Image (cartoon, rainbow, N blue to C red):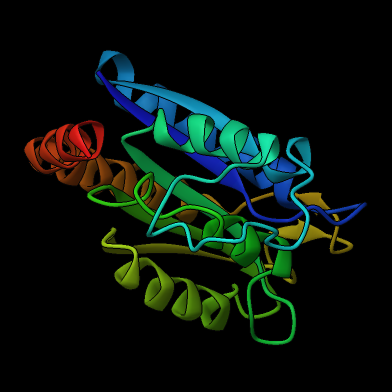
Length: 196
């Protein structure tokens, strides 16, 4: 069974990300049925400080307890959907910091994006796509871009337009296909890591 983590990319008080992520999780779980286990991963639950590991994550697993806890959670998934707002044309600093904490845990796994903001967080997602490539993630094409003007009431109460339901289903289909195709790569990577 494919395990999909829906990552809530904002830790800001009063954020909209938790509403969006729960909607994505529910749609993904319903659409995937028995082929996937879908769960929320909330950055706010990890309280990661600014990267505080002495050695880069590409060279060694982190030593700090918070790093190991984060690595265990992220490493347990086969695919991800990152739910992100856009702050000044970029993803939240907490999200990029959390991604930077790890290396092996991301590799060989597909990632999709659901962005929300004035313009659907399109520029933030572009930056995340570049980061994903460096980490050897399979950055899939479909993206859901939610508008604060059209998919929220008063910029706070999430009311997605119906067209986005089909977009999420298409995103899940592609995410599952990539996760299945990349299974041997993930297994080989894990085996190599355990032997090192």
